[in-house]
Image (cartoon, rainbow, N blue to C red):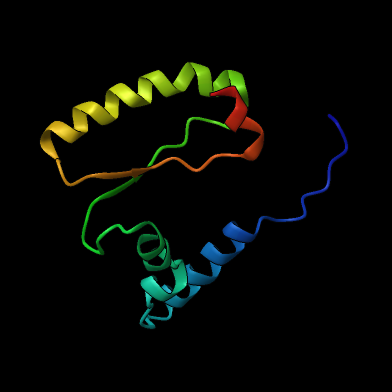
Length: 98
């Protein structure tokens, strides 16, 4: 194999820390830790509204291939969940592509 060194991933390390808190039966304030309320406030999404992140990929070819499929899925979901809000995080390099 190729020589490699694992240096960790901040999200995985945070998750491990949260699991340790849960194992100790400590109360975890998920809202404060995850910060979703800040995103909702910034985007004007009500606190209790269902929210779906659309993540079609980071490379232009992935996005071109996945986005139409995701769009169809969201249209179907909206039929049964009209209050659903969707966000599509993107990279500046992808914006001119679409």
